[in-house]
Amino acid sequence: MANDQHYLGGQWLRGEAAVLQVDNPATETLFAEFKLASSTQILQAVQLAKQAQKPWAKLASYERAVYMHKLADQLLIDAEKIGAVLAQESGKSLADAAAEVRYGAEITRYHAEWSRKIEGEVIPSDSANEQLLLLREPIGVAACLIPFNYPIYTLLRKLAPALITGNTVIIRPSNHTPCSALALAEAVEKAAFPAGVVQIAVMDHAVCELMCRQPEIGIISLTGSVDAGRHVLDYSKTNIAKVSLELGGKTPAIVADDADLTAAAKAIVNSKTTNCGQLCTAVERVYAHHSVYSTLLDLLRQLMAERQFANRLNEPTAMGPLISKDAQTRTHQIVQTAIQAGAICEIGGYLPEGLGYFYPPTLLSKVNHSMQVLREETFAPVLCVMPYQDLDEALELANDHQYGLASVLFTNRYKDVMRVANSIEAGELYINRTPADPYQGYHAGWKKSGLGGDDGKHGMLEFTQTRMVALNFA
Image (cartoon, rainbow, N blue to C red; front, side, top):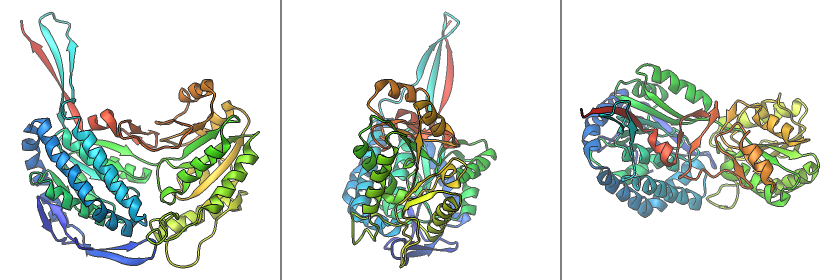
């Protein structure tokens, strides 16, 4: 890897803490090695972000947008270079990795275009000689904690709304996929943001906690697991910092008796095997109407059997690996525990030989809601299928869960669509398609799937706070 330095205060600095080794999950070979940022470096970064924030916020919002458009332009220029780094550390194909960078450029530009649309409110007062104004203001310094599964896109979906609303940002990428974030920092440098406005550094958990507990941190935005969310909530208690948490998911897909079964099966398998199932909105559990259950099960079995896994740098159309050995071991343990409890493994369910953290597409039937495989997010290519008798039961099963991020319904009956739309306990419902997180929408979870959310107007407003002005003109 060419860049083994952190981007702090507009400078490239070598880390001063422990050495981090990053491997390629498809080959288990060492890809990068560099020193993590130290607590001293991160504490200084927090101070620099604080100093840069007020001048950044005083710029007209369209001036901030100019920097962001420059960043988007540079990301398009550097998409292949950043993508090549991302592919090595994540197991993605070169095409998918570069496409992720380009999509990140789109969401950066989308938020830049909000520069003239960030609105407050005018509220009637009880006094005839007074007007109430509600203003939107930046929070200050944002700490953004990024996951490994879509590390470039998720970084930019947090960075862009934070910047356009006048915040400065410190990015902590996942230690599984840090190299692409440092490659992206080169594009940030070329966009010539003022020093301290955007800082990107790789750090261990203890230093991340120290950063998040600093009084200068106004908001902590995380995409990660429920456990990670609990840690962030604990960090936020020190200074009552605002939190925005996009956490786990266990997407249910209800397949009705009138659904196009072939189309539904293809969409479900694609959802479950994209990025080796490492997507918080990937379909994890399928509830099929009893009259079509056997047919759908056969289709899913056939399609999953056709899905091969391999190093995507050599075979781009194959399914890639899980991110780590721990993820591979955990996945197999969950599958084997389900089988021991009575589940039938229709296909998959074994540890492949050879190098790489691969796991085959795995289909389980005869499952029930007492099993770990149906209670916890697998974040792997493991799919569970159950029959249901009527829509009441389907909704009961779909809602019988700790998560509530995304949900899917395959049907052509508009009455059933409206019924599910008004009853499903999830932040998103997709009809006759699987989740894709449109960036102009709002990606927010119910229950343990999070607090607040990302994307669109509402995701942008997560990075603001309000000031009410009582304007008396008597």
